[in-house]
Image 1 (cartoon, rainbow, N blue to C red):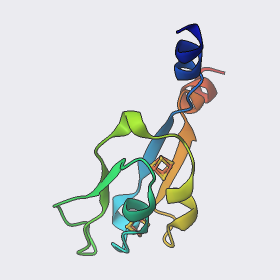
Image 2 (image 1 turned 30 degrees about the vertical axis):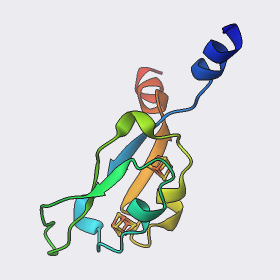
Image 3 (image 1 turned 180 degrees about the vertical axis):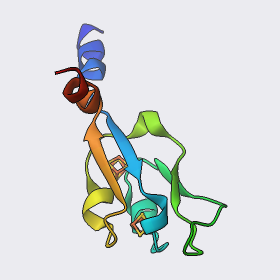
Length: 89
Ligand code: SF4
Ligand code: SF4
């Protein structure tokens, strides 16, 4: 029981950032995210494409696959708490 709790506490989580107007709707980030964090938005961006939206933020494991695959540099991730830590220091 103790082990299961330690394992859960050790799980890494990430924050996702999206510049919607850069997206060209290739769908790579949505298709290859291993945790189903992203979904195609029903809304259009300024170029007429449907960008991704974050639908399951708590499931992000900060693997950076979405960031590596995006040809438009429109999406990236940070370790949860990292941005807050930078602002605080
Ligand atoms: S960092 Fe990994 S888990 Fe998080 S949204 Fe991107 S692909 Fe999905
Ligand atoms: S990988 Fe980049 S360009 Fe492709 S859908 Fe995702 S955000 Fe848009």
